[in-house]
Length: 122
Image (cartoon, rainbow, N blue to C red):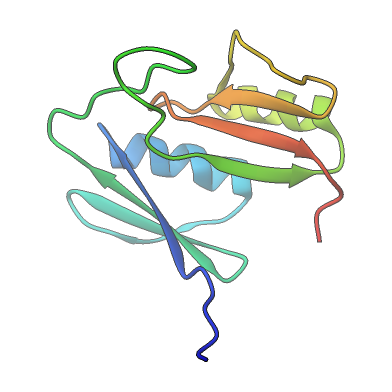
């Protein structure tokens, strides 16, 4: 049986340049490819692909008319400092926090929720 691995994660949004800059700052990497509607970042052997989609509907999480659409989890050694770094880069903390001692739910500039997970990263 062939071995599978994740090669890329793609995120739709209303402004790929703004969201690409946010994730570039947050992850300490650069945008390595960009067009008028798309950008790509390389993060630890996986591509993060961000695409502008006409009429993109901002997610409403945890409830609402528009589901989260995608969800990224980031393993961090310290939740408080990771939360502060995410906010400094342009995220906001979600109002609903199901387990704030173990993980923090944040919202990226395009409205997608993502989590900071209390794990020591590899």
